[in-house]
Amino acid sequence: MGGFSLSSAPLEPERYREALEDPGAGGYASFEGWVRDLNEGRTVRRLEYEAYESLAVSEGERIVAEAVARFGVTRAACVHRVGSLGIGELAVWVGVSAAHRGEAFAACRYIIDEVKHRLPIWKKEHYSDGDSGWVNCERCAAAAHDHDHDHGHSQRASPSPASAAAGHDYSRQIALPEVGAAGQARLAAASVLVVGAGGLGVPVLQYLAAAGIGRIGIVDGDVVEESNLHRQPLYGWADVGRPKAAVAAERLRALNRDVRVEAFEVHASAGNVDELVAHHDLVVECTDNFRAKFLVNDAVVRALKPAVFASVHQYEGQVQAYRPLPHWPCLRCLWPEAPRDGLVGNCAQAGVLGPVPATLGALQAMQALKRLLGLDAGETPALVTVDLLTLETRRLAARRHPACDHEHPGEDVPPAEAPLEREFTTLAEALESGLELVDIREAWERAHDPPGLQIPAHLPLSELMSGRAEFPSDGRYLIICAHGVRSLSLTEHLRSLGQAEVYSLRGGLAALRS
Amino acid sequence: MIEIEVQYFAVLRERAGTGRETVQTAATTAAGLYAELAARHDFGLPQAMLRVAVNDEFADWSRLLAPGDRVVFIPPVAGG
Image 1: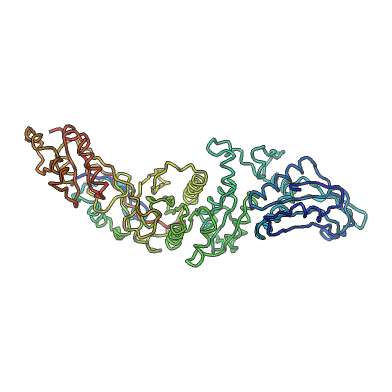
Image 2: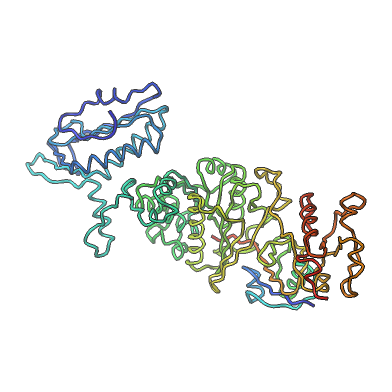
């Protein structure tokens, strides 16, 4: 046996349990829901369960399949009673066998919670005073709640087939060819840690939860303050004084029941950051201080986890994605001197308009989704600056800092290289560049140079090739030949030897005007 | 003297009173240009704390400047 079924006869847990036995299972967890004699202060004599059977069974099977996939358990099953039940009778049974108890308990809990939320099963209570009434199942209550927020839409849209897998409607993102059902499944299987639930964190949390990330961890040790509300509209005045992580978790659960949300009411610290990072696939850093940013940076670099950093200042912000790739710069590569908090201002001191962190937070959420969906394959490392006053964005290509003493994966791979060629239109311009010009043509080629195109430094390529001469290893050079072919290959050769500051004159002397 | 297009971010913008300006400079390196502008605008931030980008790429402070280069000075930002 497995899956989901409805039964009008009394449930038989022993029989169902046997069907879950498996040599690979190390344990079994079950839940039984019983008919209670009291509901909201009234004495209940008996109950009637009525189901919209075909929908209840298909949705129930889906829930059990989700639990098996999500928690990796061996077998799972659920049976729900319909018809008339007396006090103490078994109304619903859930059983899960698994290799370890953790998954068994988690899957069991998941199934009963989802069954109560999602199945079209109604309950009629018969009270001791002879009265009776239909009790809203949680699904109906949730539907009514959604309706309240629909502002005039009389009918709740029925879920499309594409979205039914998880209960939340993702059809508009699944419609993107790059996302599709496979992409949605990747999001559902993913876990994201969001450090900081403030101006940046709020949009990050909202968009990631709405997109159907399977598990979201929220780290924030602060309480909601009145001064937060203008830029953190996930919170309202009634939340002032409550822990941000807890309030945010509550809102996200209400936003999307597919998402498992965990609230960590702590500040990220050296003592907890590694463990927090270890339990998630990706980290979005949304705090407002350098101490936390560098703490998170070092943790993701150690754990080889991707991360997205951002920060804002008044009307502008910066966003930077980190990927655990050999050539990819971390936060310390960009800022080798870890800045001290208080020196360059934070929101409290400098002031900020809400849409500024909202924009940067939305960019962070986008970067996170791109990483999880594999849409960032062609992206090269950069710090992106956004100025909300001028609406200018700037993408500043970044590279690993040679002095960054952090252990990046694959230390032996060289950092991204500067272009091999430089372009100049006159010899004078090339001379002004600050590069030392070296002519590598043969002596006979130089014999007919016009007076205005003579380059004093001469190191014929033939001499270099034969080993009779050596190219100087320090300094910055522009290598020149007749058409830029030999100079380019020599430049490539020198770069491969680790000489960074050598360039080839594109097009050679032929490209220069005298 | 060469002409350089300079852009400022965050606190540097506040101190300079502008997000960008075109400057004539005798400085040959990014470091030289920053020293000159830091004195003019009283930036008060040590060069070591900042990053410089030339023509949309992060660059070393020893980077030699060419006429028309676009230079951006970026302080670290922490607000969130």
